[in-house]
Image (tube, rainbow, N blue to C red; front, top):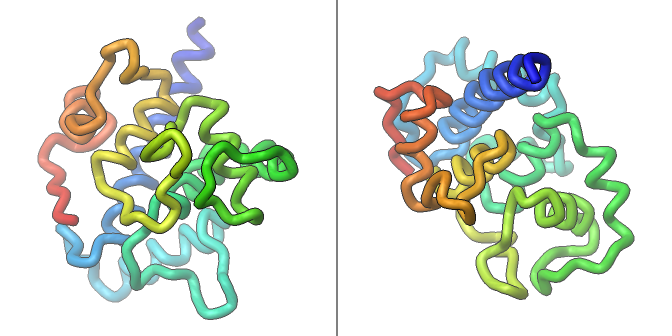
Length: 173
């Protein structure tokens, strides 16, 4: 049990950092401005850690993340990409998921990380909000909104309350 708490604490710190950086990098109007050197360092971290991969035209750091991209980054951050990719040949319950992304979405659904936006729609191209990303994070850390641990639309406040995010962090998305 102590080992499990230690691992959760490590994941929480790494995830909080990555999520904060992801949300800042993905926001159309970031709440915090990085200097040129800091921006390059953040970009390099995401690229070198393979949380972001080039699509042939770039890494997409100049655009707002969508729900699918958020799930992929989170799964990579968790170190579960190979498990997710192994689920790619299974049918996907969501009609809007492209074939290449089925494994990621299947993994997220089966692990109760994401439930989609409706029974048959994941919302792959929908803008990922701070509330949605923090909901994913809280679920990864073992909190369950269906049990009343938090409400998805108050997940940013809950993440701050649990000290996953700094209490003074602003989200301007």
